[in-house]
Length: 401
Image (cartoon, rainbow, N blue to C red; front, side, top):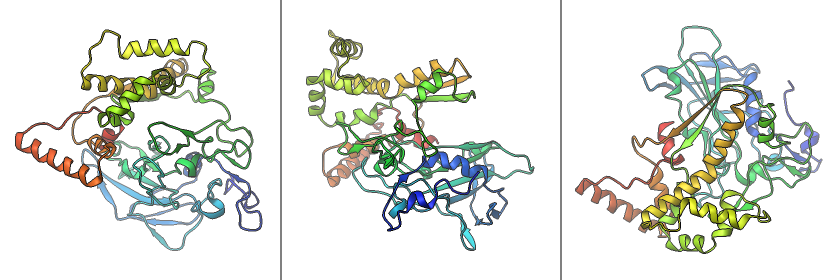
């Protein structure tokens, strides 16, 4: 394997401007980089290229097992300037011994919470290894964090559960949104991980997600639909664990809890909204009939739902449209070729970020949002009332990782 994925001639056109901004997906690069990574030792670890990472982090697993953590290890050079939309360039060597006790920067988030977070110098990863008394190779688990390709960081997902087992746990950061998924449909800016933006009604910014690339060469990452690869049995035939949380639709439905207007607009424009929600092309011959039949599944004509019941139905519908429909399809296809283990996570066993997501999606000023949250918390504590249970979504799952 070559030291780098992109030559300098692919990046620099001689005047410092971005020339051919072609790059592979940051996350796939991590898999290649790990193949040539280091054997980790107790207090100092050396990579094949002579780099050293020191660590003083010794953590405890869920059941009290000691494990080492190396945090913020750079795998690629900062994607800024002429490298902003380019394939990742290996970080190379550093001088001396690097501090491995602090997390690296998270990649910029341009939408989501409405705030601009992160640092473009974010191509780093974390490695966790249990303290073992043997020299046997252990399986490597690489976890690519969620967030709809728009937000999130691997730093949130700590390995305490996994460190009870003999496994090496790696969680990287990767470029998000427009910085990670811009694609002009040619060789200028392509599969920086994704397509030209689409605009979602529930977000105030364009959304960039992975796409199929037009040009199929050594720079390409995705050149055909993954479902086609699976259906033809060309995907890796390994056991797969796949599933989701019970109420993932809260990610979209939560705004409806604060705005009757959003609900009313959705219901007034049912045909258009249902086509967008379930991805039904506008020119589908029976699109109107499909929209009506879908509405009947979640909102039967003779139903008399209360406001809360209606909101729960919207949550269920969004959960099916954005998660379970596609998960079920993948299970039915891949199970023909390899074992598939599905899960449905519905346990609310502790604190949840969902209520904070609820707080942020309300239309009030931040001061009023915080005041309402504090007042509700005090009231619940005095009256011993339990906080409202909106359900289990990805925001809840952070606490169980």
